Image 1 (cartoon, rainbow, N blue to C red):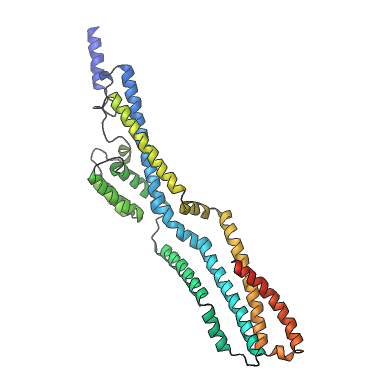
Image 2 (image 1 turned 60 degrees about the vertical axis):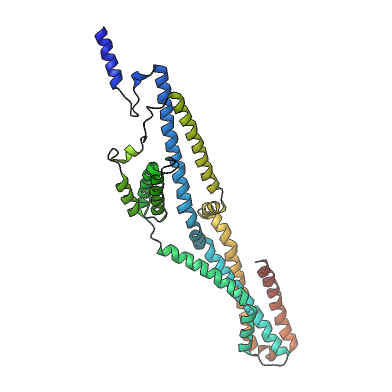
Length: 332
């Protein structure tokens, strides 16, 4: 009997769990509590890492792409609307200048009209060119950017997760070496540098952790901590998890993040673009009408008609359209 008891004790002594815990060292109830707490600690640490990598992904990848996404979906239409509105306003004003010259008994001076228009609409032109330049530069930067494929992106996130688990300062407080390594990993992650991330992961891989699964296990042993200390560690980690999740939620509540989310909604984008399309079509119709009246003015059709009455009838139609167009242009 004693032999069997000794054998049981030997087996208990040698049977340790993955964290180095020896079931024979503690009473059954205490061991169960310790084991449950350790498992909880591991889960919280994984949850913290998930929150941290989510935060970095939003900060370094999603938010910087909002500008280019906006430029391709809405910004280009805004520029076209400004362009069409400016062209309509110039055509309307040029017609008015030409009529004024005729009313004064002068021939139409086309060069003088264009110079006057350039002066009057200089500020409008500057605004349009600035907006056009912003959209152009944003789209050009997007074209030049070396975006990874979906497979490369997934691999990059997996490697960054491993490196974050090893070196994130929130998981390794006070470790300046870990901080420096994490900042380097963050730099590669932000710049979509898969090669740099892979090289850094290989260079910092521990011999005791040859594969990715080993990196998901705990980095430290809790055998030297009492049950109360383990519970305290669990409370501290839960506080860190709450803080990490709050940081993620703050980013998700930012205007840029909400805009980026909306830009992926085809219905929302269409709601923003449809009024711009309608305004462009409206202004183009008015511009074509003013252009036709300008051509008629140059050909002397006003003088070839039945005097001021004929010209006035044509002017009334043009003025009505100009009034509508001017009001909507001002609303713009």
